[in-house]
Length: 178
Image (cartoon, rainbow, N blue to C red; front, top):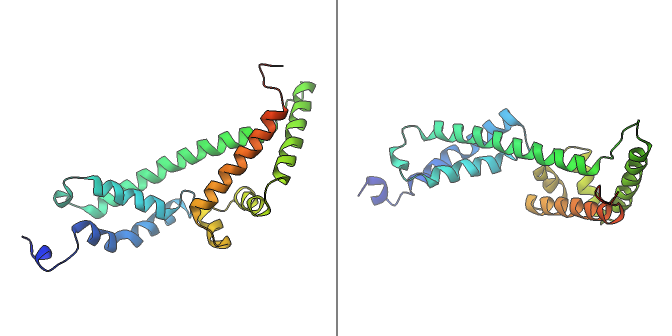
């Protein structure tokens, strides 16, 4: 038995977590900003990947491993976030083509419906959408300011987007119907 285990020391992963958690979060924050994705989420994913390794004790430089994994996860998450954000923007931005009056009219109608859908949201949900879209705050920052959990903020954002999508889709004919 190792001296760590005999002395009742926590496992290697717990030691690495205590030693590098703040450092990895700070690195992600410096390199990629405060979010999204949030540095804490990225660090958590890096440690999860580290814990999934069966050869943890054989890892020559766990700190370097954590940095590399955190870097890669941040890039992956930013790509996912960017794709999701583009999809949301396509959904919520009016289609405008100045050469096609029908598309201009459709875009204006879509915008009117979105404004109605947005106005029908609960005040706190509207505030969260504004903080996210207009003020460009991360879910973590919104959560801190409103005293909510980041998960709850994300859930309310998803519900708001789904609500707006449902209102628009219910009122506008699909491309196939036109």
